[in-house]
Image (cartoon, rainbow, N blue to C red; front, side, top):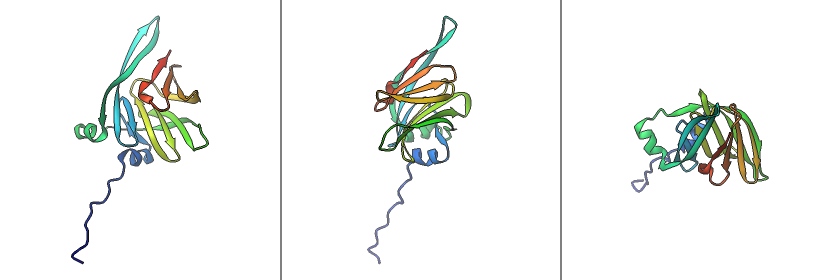
Length: 159
C-alpha cells in the first residue's frame, strides 16, 4: 500500500476540449492537435476597389506559450459548411468565429480536430471544397483561401 504510485492526472488536450465546446484559438494562425501553433501574418490591402490579402507564416509556438499571456483567447465558432473528403473519415469544416470579420477552417478525423485555421479579418467562410489535396474555403468576401491539407500554414488567397 505504501508502494502505490501517485501520478498526476493526464491533462486533457486543450485543442480537443475547446473544439467540443465549439471554440478554437482566436489568434491568426494554424493550431494543430498536438497544441503547436504557427502564427500567420495577415495583411489586407485595397487595390482597384478590391480588398486583398497577403498571408504568410510568421512564427512557430505552442498554445501554452500563447495562453500564458492571455488565457481567454478562445472564439466561439459556428459551422457554416462541411465536407467529408476521404474514406478514412477526414472532414473539413468552415464557418465564423465570434466577430463579423472572423473565420475558421478546420480539418478533422472523426470528432478529433487535426488542425484549425483562425483568421481575424478573413470574414466568415461560407463554403468549403476539396481539390488536388487542397482545402478551398470561400469567404463571404468571395475570396478563395487555399490551404494545402498537409501544410495549412502555406495558405494563399485568391481575390
